[in-house]
Length: 177
Image (cartoon, rainbow, N blue to C red; front, side, top):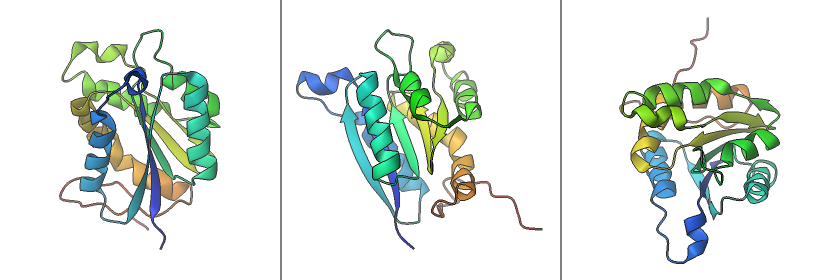
């Protein structure tokens, strides 16, 4: 079986402003490393808050890099520069609104400003794209909420079989009859 390729995209204008330590992208990699026991390869990008750059990056990861899952962080708030959801919607064939709904519901348990977040998810060809917030703590909370559905979603798209450490996260897969 080949390694699953997972795109990790940090969207931040601070990245182009000089010295920048990307804690959010690293948080995604750390969480996925805890979750997954099957072999996987991160395809890691740090890009500015520019809709055309975000779109081009998502298209490249889905169409050329063959990532079964693309996880973004940043650019999901109400600021004028926050355009990650718009870029995601522009490149997706179909949207998966349940992901954003669940992430906001989970985040509301911790902060009342979660209603300001515009995370979304969608499908482009054989890739699932999921937008996460930008704070490492929120990334963990949101991934803990939605990840149980991700391996089965990728199964349904004929993607690689993602095996998880069930002591850390238990993916949901219907039992065969």
